[in-house]
Image (cartoon, rainbow, N blue to C red; front, side, top):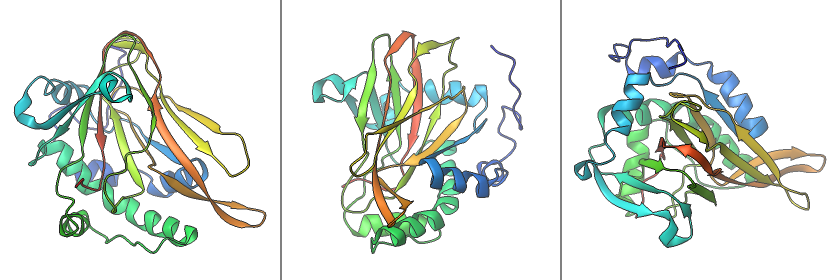
Length: 248
């Protein structure tokens, strides 16, 4: 491996909540405001990444499997976790959400969207379940040589939390080559802007799911965001996606 150091032992002696609290969320919020994405370096240790990736063949952890080529989504596949989520995935989902809820509410206010989000994730999930959105959305993705993920938006049902998180579980250069995480941003009457997010094993990226507000000379307007993964050249790439709303 590359000899990276992590701010906590691989045994996860530092809780999900504590490691999430340790980030500079003011800077993360500013980057999300400015670019529609922000990185959370070293969110998981190498051992934690390997442990989550190793769940993929065990169907008991998942509610469904999607082969992307069958649906025109790209090449590769992913599995949606079932409840209860793997402990670390579930705890990170719970711990990250409150740091994004205020930003999500501000974005909706700036874009003239009425929906507002409660301060804690349990309350938001209760709202999703009351609306008939009861199926968990966190997922584990697997790519091999030649695989890719087309640009898309993870929209499930009427209740959509506008920010989500992806965590890279494999090490670029060692486990795979290619497979970069990419975002596109389309502004009205302008050409699309592309953002390539460099990630290392254990790094996470928070990013806009659908729309985000941008201030222009004539006020605030919405930009349309999509995300995907470029073609894998060699090896195997695993990633976990943490989506905060549940699906119908």
